[in-house]
Amino acid sequence: MPMEQSEIEQLIKAAIPDAQIELVDTAGDNDHWSAKVISEQFRGKSRVQQHQMVNKAFGDKLGTTLHALALSTATPD
Image (cartoon, rainbow, N blue to C red; front, side, top):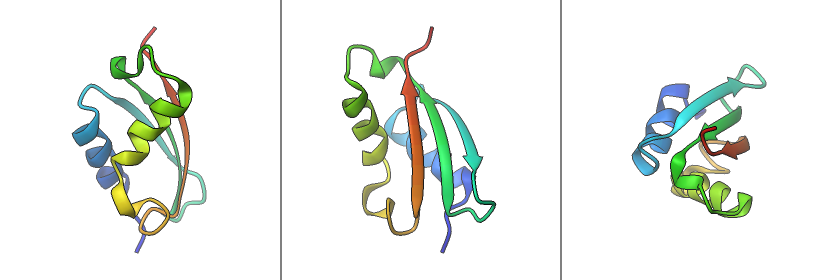
């Protein structure tokens, strides 16, 4: 079952409360998403660590319920 945009946002916000999230359903099927996540919590962390923080929010749903997530992360400017 695909994952709705609101559920993706809720999971990320639960793990990273200050996150600003931009989501795009890249295939129009609620199964392939592109996400840009901006958070102060990323400051001083490598890009890999930032992505790990976001991916951790999904637990075992990443790769199963949420089939694909193209991710970019940044700190606020």
